[in-house]
Image 1 (spheres, rainbow, N blue to C red):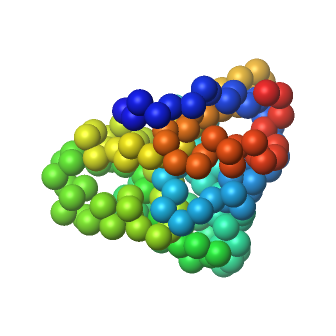
Image 2 (cartoon, helix red, strand yellow):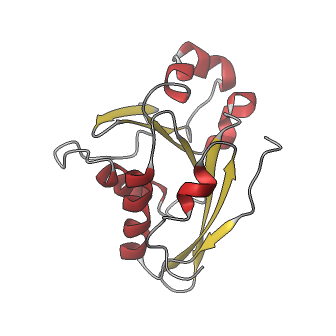
Length: 165
């Protein structure tokens, strides 16, 4: 983990519409080389959030964003390339990821959104926006955002959506 860590921002979108607004805003704020990690239980909305980030990046609707659980990596072209990684079924650890060329995605010119980032081990980028998602209330979510380096702290000030802070 990086020592350059900003205080956490906690958002509580009341429903999936609020989660979508938040994701679109993140996509609009994203810059080349950004890494966003999504941690949370199955069904909490990690792929839904990634779909909204894609919308904010102007990924065409015919490039539907789905969970790349079996392919591990899906690429989508929008304002910037979106690299969507789902590491849930990863079995070989860091060696398998290096063989897949993960560093090209983590340090490329696109936006890298990673579900189940704990599977990266020592490969996790020091500069990233870490998002922890959890269920909150009947249909809401709680998102805890932590910026590790980079310009995320100033960009998060322009974040829309997300309900209560």
